Length: 198
Image 1 (cartoon, rainbow, N blue to C red):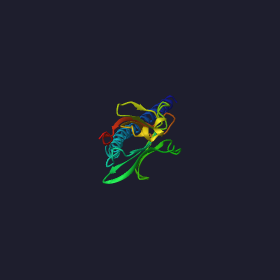
Image 2 (cartoon, rainbow, N blue to C red):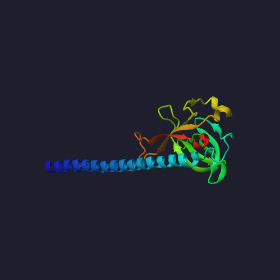
Image 3 (cartoon, helix red, strand yellow):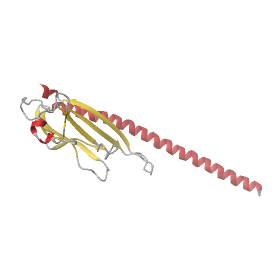
Image 4 (tube, rainbow, N blue to C red):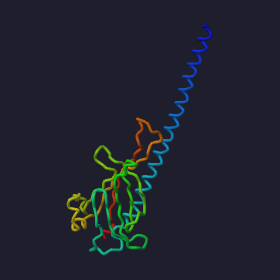
């Protein structure tokens, strides 16, 4: 009887040990997948901001006279401007669209003459209650901030010479449970509209 109890006890301890090993292996695999996704998210964020910065935003005012109205809309979540892109005069819009309940995020898109040209990229629904995925701030040639209420007028939009764009992109985590947190990467970059200075 004692030998049977010893064998049963050893089996239970062995089973618990094996369960611990299997659980640890799964957790390591989940953490590894999340780290890979985090690296991909950082890389993706850098690529997105580079293309928006050096390709789309660099076209603002290109090919237009110094008296032309370049920026037609300037809000915290939308920037619409005109410029020459790939030899064609275009209207370019960088916009955060309406909240997508299925993704629990906002789509960030770049539109060229009204059609989607780049994106969507998913930006978070909040960042400590201050940033809803994307925020664009506007500055004049003296680097003074221009308020959003002033930007409803074309006269004040003509004063814009630079923008600060903050965005936080996210990736859904590999493992969905009560402790799961989506992977996020926040980036801030400035763009000086060199065509508007000339």
